[in-house]
Length: 114
Length: 110
Image 1 (cartoon, rainbow over the protein chains, first blue to last red):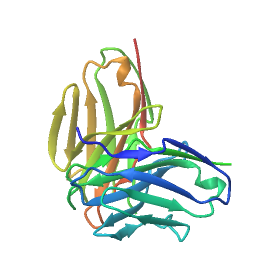
Image 2: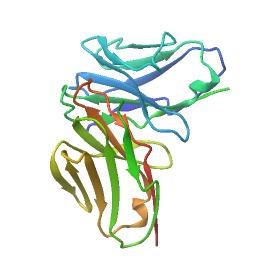
Image 3: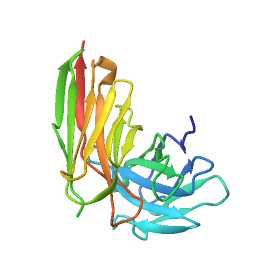
């Protein structure tokens, strides 16, 4: 069964550093998403991406964050100048169409900011 | 504001019991997603539905659009079913993103 792959599975970074979280969506999917889950809290939507641009973003997704699809297969989330409160599990997801067909989540990257 | 409420928050069952987890939401939706999260943190999609009922193995998901309510049932529960079960909804008025409930933590005792 096709999978959404996220790397690394766990990343530790110093406060103030930049991190890039990487995702390889399912190959024929066109819609891409990032979510995060702070420990003990619910999963929250960050951003959706379609046709090489952001289609929706939440109020969490401020100027500290950016997304990119640098080639035909990767989808990245960049966090500039990380803060302690950015520590969370970050999930990538992809779907085939706007109706959400085949909506699939990756296994997540646990980001720890120290 | 999209509110998704799940009940119960925590559930302990004996192996073999029939389990029901409930999800209520406050807005019109275009889809509802049931997901499973294991202690390692990864999320696995169980069902995505917009009407009626879906069944996969021992899992059954139902949705009542008029009542804004969905249930996830597990028949003949097993200790390996122990996980957090999460309901998430996609509003009919916004984009493709899902809004998540806080989850139901299920423990099945042998």
